[in-house]
Structure formats: structure tokens, C-alpha cells
Amino acid sequence: MPGTLQEGGASFQTTHWTVVLRAIDEESADSAQQALSGFCEAYWPPLYSFLRHRGFSSADAQDLVQGFFAHLLEQNTLNHADQQKGRLRTFLLGSLQNFLYNEYDRARALKRGGGRQIVSIEEHLPEAEAAMLATAHLSDAGCYDLVWASTIVSRAWQSLQNDFVAEGKAEWLEELRPFVAGGSVVPLNQEQAAARLGVPIATLRTWLSRLRQRYRESLRTEVASTVSDPADVDQELHHLYQILMA
Image (cartoon, rainbow, N blue to C red; front, side):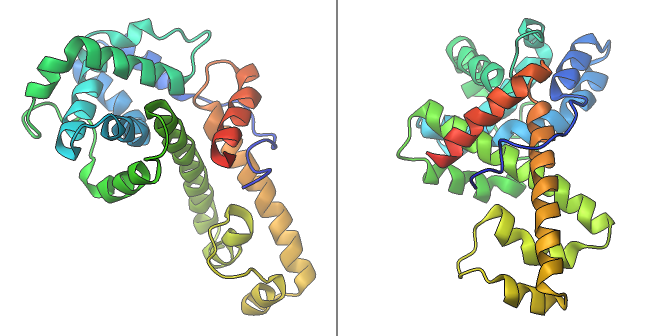
């Protein structure tokens, strides 16, 4: 998807670092867990893929992901997050590696369903397994980075899709998506797409231009939520672009 990660002008909004720091400040464990719920749901796939790539079974990787997120809540691990220079991508991977080194025996003893269930994994497990298999040729860290980048892109597109559904434009978004996000198994033809939508080709091209702009903005907003400093957004975008195009 050349060009889709490096442009756009979305403002730097509330970040997932805010969720991390809010969890640190919460007085009750229940409030902290609630604050982290969406955070964990968003970022477990690359952690799971990293563990599977390291050789853990699917069941063990699920247990370790649950144990890792519980560890973030229970052991004040989040206090080590340096918001001034942090990026979630590197913070989570480093924290997971430390967790494996220091907590492996205890984490391995957990049985699925017996420990704290911080994140629901089963529903999206097939997709996570497919992502892991697709990165078998990469290093452990390379697997993590690629699944992370793919997760960011997926979340950005889902956010955009939610907006278009709310606007009543789901049909034409689905028709135009292959022109913007790729993935089509057949040759793309703008004239045929315009005919299916019942609009002139000039109108379709205008829609495509606007869709590309909104997609870039959605990607930028999603990436901005994973860095603590707005000045780091472009560098992180470039890094993810290189990963996806490798």
C-alpha cells in the first residue's frame, strides 16, 4: 500500500499512552482493568504472534498473553513506561521479553481459564494464527513488527469503516476499498466500479481521492495513539511503512 502511511494531517489526539498512565493512577484494580480493556484488546495479536514464533504452543501463548497483561496490572510494571520517549510498540515487546525472563515459570503454571482473563482471544484466534504463519520466514522481532503494523492498519481501516457506515456510505466504501487498501484478487477497473455504483467516472475519482485522504488521516490518528510525542508520529509511520513494504 505505497503512500498510505506517510501522508495525512490528523491531529495528535488522546493516545493509548493516556490509557496506560490512567491505569497507573487508578486506585482500584477494577477501575484499572476497565481502563486497560480496550488497550489489551487492541494489542494482543502481535504479542501472541511473537510468542508463537518463539515456539510456544497456541495454548501456552494464550496463557502467557493473559499472564502478561495481568502482570502489567498487578506488578506496577506500567510505572516503568516513560511517556516522554515511549512508543507502545517497543515498550510492549520489551516488557513481554522481561516478563518471559523473570516470570516464565509462574506464567507457564497458569492454566487457561484459571488465571485472570484480561483479554478475549478465542474469537480472533484464527486470524492471529494465520498472521503468525505468514511471518514464519522472519525473526521473532520481525514477526512482532509486521503483525503490529498490520494491526495498526486494520484498526485504522475499521475506524474509517465505522464512520462510513454511520454516514450511510458502506456500499460505496466496500466497492472502492480495493483501490485504496489493496487485496483484490481480480484486476481493478474504475469504469466498471463507477457503473456498479451508478455514478460518472469523474464522481468516482473524486470519491477515491477523498477516501484516500481520509484513510491516510485514519492511519495517522491510529499511529499517533501509540506514541507519546507528536513529533514521533512521522518517524513511526515511516518505520511501519518500511515493514509493510519489505
